[in-house]
Image (cartoon, rainbow, N blue to C red; front, side, top):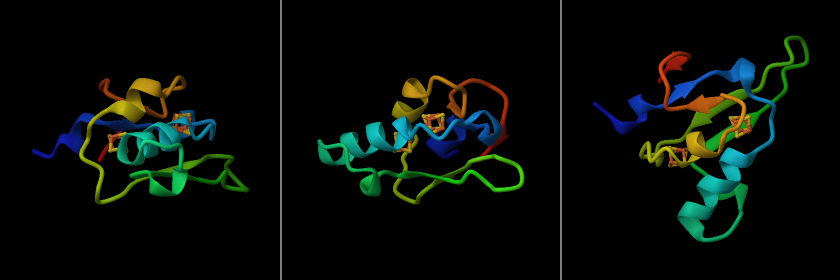
Length: 83
Ligand code: SF4
Ligand code: SF4
């Protein structure tokens, strides 16, 4: 089982703060460069208002993004859509 399975994604709880991208990019590069993150936030969708949360191939499920997400968009807890 991939470590990514540890992550639960709840796009409807995401507020688009981009903290996950910043923290993830810092882990990979030592700098806050969202383009280098293994997670991507896009949106909000103009009809639903929801953001989209995508994990890229290089994500190894370290859980840093979940640890810093204050809104439950990404978490390690049960619930949400499993990846
Ligand atoms: S998943 Fe969490 S940390 Fe990432 S943009 Fe959404 S609310 Fe912010
Ligand atoms: S689990 Fe780790 S590598 Fe994957 S998106 Fe989150 S911080 Fe980045």
